[in-house]
Length: 333
Image 1 (cartoon, helix red, strand yellow):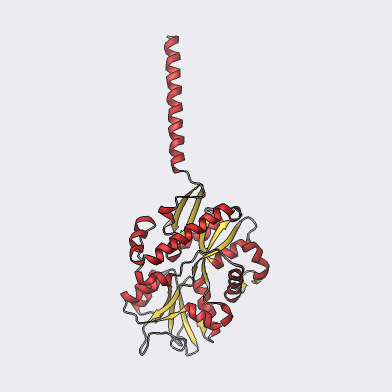
Image 2 (cartoon, helix red, strand yellow):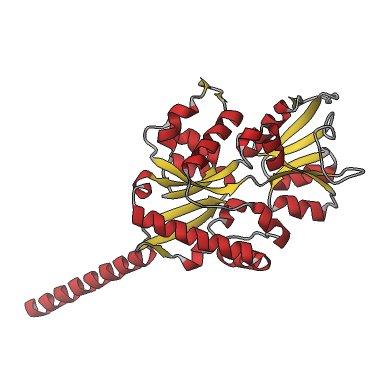
């Protein structure tokens, strides 16, 4: 009996060891070294090919997630991802305000990709006289779209109201949660125009037979020639530790450049690829050049333009008052 009990104990121990080993093997199969998070829409396009072509970067196993745009700030606030694409102003503010959050802005993933769309008699370019006394839906109230919209209205002498009927020196603005709601407002004719990003601008113009648009990038440049050619819409933020890892950063920028090259050169194939490897979204071929994906390494000139952009569109905080963006530069970059 003792011999049988000893054999049974040894067999049980072997079974436990095997089970534990299998468990660890399963964990290792799912394990990743670094996680990348990008919001739905054009920012996700910046990591398009990485999901299949770069499952490892500089020896590090990568995980790529496309998340709801409303949740992207939490990725940084709670340091859930190592690499994050998110609105430049949002990421810069979190870094500036928090001693615990350690990220650096290393690239502009998406340059300006905003358009005001609608119908117009006698032309296809919307100007500021066209929107006087009109109603406009605008996405991203606290993000770059809302900031750019308010900056341009102010620079062109238009007062913004959120209730009542606008007079000839005003525009009524209805902030909406995203492109779907902006489209609904246009369809219901509760607004005359809508400010949306790509690919929504191209999709909505075709679906709703809209013939006119305002290029918000050009309007930003015209508001002040020193602004630069466009504005930084979505930034690529990495943890401070990664930013200091030269080997990894070189490999990351090479992967991003190859991904961008494929997207730009294969616009007709992007939608099929995105649906198969990222999430269920459509990118009409005509929208691809207007998506303005970038992901090049920032130069000192680029950094100066970003600081100037933040000074223009986010000079104050509701809780802090005036923001000293120059003082925050070293922390952000």
